Length: 224
Length: 80
Image 1 (cartoon, chains in turn blue, purple):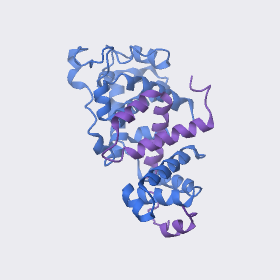
Image 2 (tube, rainbow over the protein chains, first blue to last red):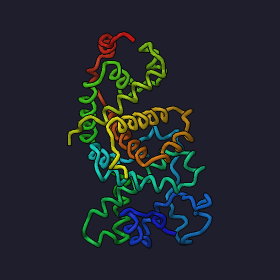
Image 3 (cartoon, rainbow over the protein chains, first blue to last red):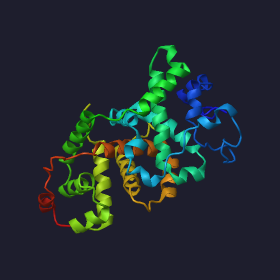
Image 4 (tube, each protein chain N blue to C red):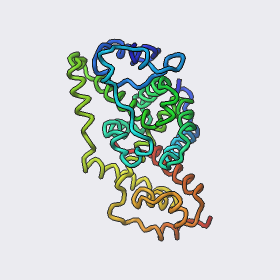
Protein backbone atom coordinates (compact mmCIF):
# COMPACT_ATOMS: atom_id res chain seq x y z
CA UNK A 1 0.00 0.00 0.00
CA UNK A 2 1.35 3.33 -0.96
CA UNK A 3 1.85 6.09 1.53
CA UNK A 4 -0.04 8.40 -0.79
CA UNK A 5 -3.05 6.21 -1.54
CA UNK A 6 -5.42 7.88 0.87
CA UNK A 7 -4.37 11.41 0.09
CA UNK A 8 -7.05 13.19 -1.88
CA UNK A 9 -7.42 16.63 -3.27
CA UNK A 10 -3.80 17.61 -3.06
CA UNK A 11 -1.14 17.90 -5.66
CA UNK A 12 0.93 15.51 -3.62
CA UNK A 13 -1.30 12.57 -4.36
CA UNK A 14 -0.39 12.51 -8.02
CA UNK A 15 3.22 12.89 -7.21
CA UNK A 16 3.08 10.13 -4.66
CA UNK A 17 1.21 7.82 -7.01
CA UNK A 18 3.79 8.43 -9.73
CA UNK A 19 6.58 7.48 -7.42
CA UNK A 20 4.90 4.81 -5.36
CA UNK A 21 7.23 2.16 -6.63
CA UNK A 22 10.29 4.14 -5.77
CA UNK A 23 12.43 2.64 -3.07
CA UNK A 24 12.80 5.94 -1.31
CA UNK A 25 9.17 6.02 -0.32
CA UNK A 26 9.43 2.69 1.35
CA UNK A 27 11.98 4.26 3.62
CA UNK A 28 9.78 7.05 4.83
CA UNK A 29 6.92 4.99 6.11
CA UNK A 30 5.88 5.49 9.64
CA UNK A 31 3.36 3.20 11.30
CA UNK A 32 0.29 4.50 9.56
CA UNK A 33 -3.22 3.87 10.73
CA UNK A 34 -5.34 1.68 8.58
CA UNK A 35 -9.07 2.37 8.88
CA UNK A 36 -9.30 0.15 11.94
CA UNK A 37 -6.22 1.80 13.45
CA UNK A 38 -3.90 -1.16 13.16
CA UNK A 39 -0.51 -0.41 11.79
CA UNK A 40 0.23 -1.22 8.20
CA UNK A 41 3.31 -3.09 9.19
CA UNK A 42 1.18 -6.08 10.08
CA UNK A 43 -0.69 -6.00 6.79
CA UNK A 44 2.41 -6.47 4.74
CA UNK A 45 3.25 -4.18 1.88
CA UNK A 46 6.33 -5.15 0.00
CA UNK A 47 8.07 -7.87 2.00
CA UNK A 48 11.44 -7.00 0.50
CA UNK A 49 11.28 -3.57 2.04
CA UNK A 50 10.32 -4.45 5.57
CA UNK A 51 13.69 -3.73 7.08
CA UNK A 52 14.06 -0.49 5.17
CA UNK A 53 11.46 1.39 7.12
CA UNK A 54 12.65 4.48 8.86
CA UNK A 55 13.44 3.79 12.50
CA UNK A 56 11.08 5.25 15.02
CA UNK A 57 12.16 8.62 16.29
CA UNK A 58 14.02 8.30 19.55
CA UNK A 59 12.23 9.18 22.73
CA UNK A 60 10.52 12.53 23.06
CA UNK A 61 12.64 13.35 26.09
CA UNK A 62 15.76 13.28 23.99
CA UNK A 63 14.40 15.73 21.45
CA UNK A 64 15.24 18.84 23.43
CA UNK A 65 18.78 17.67 23.95
CA UNK A 66 19.45 16.87 20.33
CA UNK A 67 16.98 19.13 18.63
CA UNK A 68 18.92 19.45 15.41
CA UNK A 69 19.15 15.74 15.01
CA UNK A 70 15.40 15.41 15.30
CA UNK A 71 14.27 18.55 13.65
CA UNK A 72 16.72 18.67 10.81
CA UNK A 73 18.60 21.51 9.20
CA UNK A 74 16.87 21.05 5.86
CA UNK A 75 13.44 21.53 7.40
CA UNK A 76 14.77 24.53 9.26
CA UNK A 77 15.98 26.20 6.09
CA UNK A 78 12.66 25.57 4.41
CA UNK A 79 10.65 27.03 7.27
CA UNK A 80 12.90 30.02 7.82
CA UNK A 81 12.39 31.10 4.25
CA UNK A 82 8.63 30.82 4.68
CA UNK A 83 7.93 32.49 7.96
CA UNK A 84 5.88 34.99 6.05
CA UNK A 85 2.79 32.99 5.44
CA UNK A 86 3.45 31.27 2.17
CA UNK A 87 1.56 28.85 0.02
CA UNK A 88 4.38 26.33 0.28
CA UNK A 89 4.33 26.36 4.07
CA UNK A 90 0.57 25.80 3.97
CA UNK A 91 0.92 22.98 1.46
CA UNK A 92 3.58 21.35 3.59
CA UNK A 93 1.43 21.65 6.71
CA UNK A 94 -1.64 20.31 4.93
CA UNK A 95 0.16 17.22 3.72
CA UNK A 96 1.99 16.74 7.03
CA UNK A 97 -1.37 16.91 8.76
CA UNK A 98 -2.85 14.18 6.55
CA UNK A 99 0.15 11.95 7.12
CA UNK A 100 0.06 12.62 10.85
CA UNK A 101 -3.54 11.42 10.97
CA UNK A 102 -2.40 8.11 9.56
CA UNK A 103 0.19 7.48 12.23
CA UNK A 104 -1.12 4.86 14.58
CA UNK A 105 -2.53 6.70 17.61
CA UNK A 106 -0.53 4.99 20.35
CA UNK A 107 2.69 5.64 18.42
CA UNK A 108 1.86 9.27 17.78
CA UNK A 109 1.07 9.96 21.41
CA UNK A 110 4.37 8.45 22.46
CA UNK A 111 6.39 11.02 20.48
CA UNK A 112 4.19 13.41 18.54
CA UNK A 113 6.78 16.05 17.89
CA UNK A 114 9.39 13.64 16.60
CA UNK A 115 6.83 12.14 14.20
CA UNK A 116 5.77 15.55 12.97
CA UNK A 117 9.34 16.63 12.31
CA UNK A 118 10.18 13.41 10.54
CA UNK A 119 7.13 13.65 8.30
CA UNK A 120 7.89 17.31 7.58
CA UNK A 121 11.52 16.61 6.73
CA UNK A 122 10.46 13.94 4.27
CA UNK A 123 8.00 16.35 2.71
CA UNK A 124 10.62 19.05 2.32
CA UNK A 125 12.78 16.59 0.44
CA UNK A 126 9.84 15.66 -1.79
CA UNK A 127 9.05 19.33 -2.33
CA UNK A 128 12.52 20.03 -3.55
CA UNK A 129 12.43 17.10 -5.88
CA UNK A 130 9.09 18.15 -7.32
CA UNK A 131 10.36 21.65 -7.91
CA UNK A 132 13.00 20.30 -10.23
CA UNK A 133 11.90 19.82 -13.78
CA UNK A 134 14.42 17.27 -14.82
CA UNK A 135 12.56 13.92 -14.90
CA UNK A 136 15.73 12.10 -13.95
CA UNK A 137 15.24 13.36 -10.40
CA UNK A 138 12.49 10.78 -10.01
CA UNK A 139 15.01 8.03 -10.45
CA UNK A 140 15.23 6.13 -7.21
CA UNK A 141 19.01 6.25 -6.94
CA UNK A 142 18.96 10.01 -7.22
CA UNK A 143 16.27 10.20 -4.57
CA UNK A 144 18.24 8.06 -2.22
CA UNK A 145 21.41 9.99 -2.78
CA UNK A 146 19.60 13.19 -2.05
CA UNK A 147 17.99 11.78 1.05
CA UNK A 148 21.36 10.68 2.33
CA UNK A 149 22.94 13.98 1.51
CA UNK A 150 20.31 16.07 3.25
CA UNK A 151 20.38 13.74 6.21
CA UNK A 152 23.89 14.70 7.21
CA UNK A 153 24.08 18.36 6.35
CA UNK A 154 23.88 20.52 9.46
CA UNK A 155 23.45 24.26 9.50
CA UNK A 156 26.81 25.93 9.19
CA UNK A 157 28.07 28.60 11.56
CA UNK A 158 27.17 31.54 9.37
CA UNK A 159 23.58 30.32 8.97
CA UNK A 160 23.22 29.87 12.71
CA UNK A 161 24.72 33.26 13.43
CA UNK A 162 22.37 34.93 10.92
CA UNK A 163 19.39 33.18 12.53
CA UNK A 164 20.45 34.33 15.97
CA UNK A 165 20.91 37.92 14.82
CA UNK A 166 17.42 38.01 13.34
CA UNK A 167 15.94 36.79 16.60
CA UNK A 168 17.98 39.28 18.62
CA UNK A 169 16.66 42.13 16.49
CA UNK A 170 13.07 40.94 16.94
CA UNK A 171 13.51 40.56 20.68
CA UNK A 172 14.48 44.20 20.97
CA UNK A 173 10.95 45.10 19.91
CA UNK A 174 9.38 43.09 22.73
CA UNK A 175 8.58 44.14 26.31
CA UNK A 176 11.66 43.94 28.59
CA UNK A 177 10.32 41.08 30.66
CA UNK A 178 9.52 38.95 27.60
CA UNK A 179 13.03 39.56 26.42
CA UNK A 180 14.58 38.72 29.79
CA UNK A 181 12.68 35.43 29.94
CA UNK A 182 13.63 34.53 26.39
CA UNK A 183 17.32 35.25 26.97
CA UNK A 184 17.43 33.39 30.28
CA UNK A 185 15.97 30.36 28.53
CA UNK A 186 17.85 30.34 25.24
CA UNK A 187 21.14 31.97 26.17
CA UNK A 188 21.53 30.76 29.73
CA UNK A 189 19.57 27.52 29.42
CA UNK A 190 17.67 28.05 32.66
CA UNK A 191 14.62 25.92 33.44
CA UNK A 192 11.24 27.60 33.74
CA UNK A 193 11.22 27.31 37.56
CA UNK A 194 14.71 28.81 37.67
CA UNK A 195 13.61 31.73 35.51
CA UNK A 196 10.53 32.21 37.68
CA UNK A 197 12.69 32.30 40.79
CA UNK A 198 15.20 34.75 39.37
CA UNK A 199 12.54 37.14 38.08
CA UNK A 200 10.24 36.62 41.07
CA UNK A 201 7.24 35.71 38.94
CA UNK A 202 5.25 32.49 38.63
CA UNK A 203 6.22 29.60 36.35
CA UNK A 204 2.85 30.08 34.68
CA UNK A 205 3.73 33.68 33.83
CA UNK A 206 7.16 32.66 32.55
CA UNK A 207 5.58 30.22 30.12
CA UNK A 208 2.81 32.60 29.12
CA UNK A 209 5.18 35.45 28.31
CA UNK A 210 7.63 33.14 26.57
CA UNK A 211 4.85 31.77 24.37
CA UNK A 212 3.79 35.30 23.47
CA UNK A 213 7.37 36.27 22.70
CA UNK A 214 7.84 33.29 20.40
CA UNK A 215 4.50 33.96 18.68
CA UNK A 216 5.42 37.60 18.16
CA UNK A 217 8.78 36.67 16.70
CA UNK A 218 7.03 34.30 14.32
CA UNK A 219 4.68 37.05 13.16
CA UNK A 220 7.25 39.82 13.03
CA UNK A 221 8.49 40.92 9.68
CA UNK A 222 11.17 38.50 8.70
CA UNK A 223 14.01 39.63 6.52
CA UNK A 224 14.84 37.35 3.66
CA UNK B 1 -9.71 26.06 2.74
CA UNK B 2 -7.29 27.65 5.18
CA UNK B 3 -6.67 30.66 2.95
CA UNK B 4 -10.13 32.11 2.85
CA UNK B 5 -10.65 32.42 6.58
CA UNK B 6 -7.24 33.71 7.62
CA UNK B 7 -7.58 36.36 10.21
CA UNK B 8 -4.78 38.18 12.05
CA UNK B 9 -6.12 37.64 15.56
CA UNK B 10 -6.85 33.97 14.86
CA UNK B 11 -3.37 33.56 13.43
CA UNK B 12 -1.83 35.09 16.51
CA UNK B 13 -3.90 32.92 18.81
CA UNK B 14 -2.88 29.75 17.00
CA UNK B 15 0.76 30.86 17.01
CA UNK B 16 0.54 31.37 20.77
CA UNK B 17 -1.01 27.96 21.24
CA UNK B 18 1.74 26.45 19.12
CA UNK B 19 4.39 28.27 21.16
CA UNK B 20 2.68 27.09 24.34
CA UNK B 21 3.04 23.47 23.22
CA UNK B 22 6.61 24.02 22.10
CA UNK B 23 7.46 25.33 25.57
CA UNK B 24 5.56 22.58 27.39
CA UNK B 25 7.32 19.90 25.37
CA UNK B 26 10.67 20.97 26.77
CA UNK B 27 9.55 19.62 30.11
CA UNK B 28 9.62 15.93 30.82
CA UNK B 29 6.06 15.83 32.17
CA UNK B 30 4.52 17.29 29.02
CA UNK B 31 0.99 16.26 28.07
CA UNK B 32 1.89 14.37 24.89
CA UNK B 33 -1.64 13.12 24.39
CA UNK B 34 -2.99 16.66 24.61
CA UNK B 35 -0.39 17.86 22.14
CA UNK B 36 -1.16 15.05 19.69
CA UNK B 37 -4.86 15.88 19.89
CA UNK B 38 -4.12 19.55 19.27
CA UNK B 39 -2.05 18.71 16.20
CA UNK B 40 -4.79 16.45 14.88
CA UNK B 41 -7.38 19.19 15.26
CA UNK B 42 -6.24 21.32 12.32
CA UNK B 43 -3.62 21.66 9.59
CA UNK B 44 -3.25 25.25 10.76
CA UNK B 45 -2.01 23.92 14.10
CA UNK B 46 0.55 21.81 12.28
CA UNK B 47 1.66 24.79 10.23
CA UNK B 48 2.05 27.11 13.20
CA UNK B 49 3.85 24.50 15.24
CA UNK B 50 6.40 24.03 12.46
CA UNK B 51 6.89 27.78 12.10
CA UNK B 52 7.35 28.47 15.81
CA UNK B 53 9.72 25.50 15.86
CA UNK B 54 11.81 27.36 13.30
CA UNK B 55 11.83 30.49 15.43
CA UNK B 56 12.76 28.52 18.54
CA UNK B 57 15.55 26.75 16.72
CA UNK B 58 16.78 30.01 15.20
CA UNK B 59 17.13 31.41 18.70
CA UNK B 60 19.82 28.90 19.61
CA UNK B 61 22.99 30.82 20.11
CA UNK B 62 21.43 34.22 20.71
CA UNK B 63 23.45 36.83 22.54
CA UNK B 64 26.65 34.85 22.69
CA UNK B 65 28.43 38.11 23.43
CA UNK B 66 26.23 38.41 26.52
CA UNK B 67 25.33 42.01 25.80
CA UNK B 68 21.82 41.66 27.19
CA UNK B 69 21.74 42.70 30.85
CA UNK B 70 18.92 40.87 32.62
CA UNK B 71 19.00 43.17 35.66
CA UNK B 72 18.56 46.15 33.41
CA UNK B 73 15.63 44.57 31.58
CA UNK B 74 13.93 43.75 34.86
CA UNK B 75 14.44 47.32 36.01
CA UNK B 76 12.78 48.55 32.79
CA UNK B 77 9.79 46.28 33.21
CA UNK B 78 6.62 47.84 34.58
CA UNK B 79 5.69 46.53 38.04
CA UNK B 80 3.62 43.34 37.91
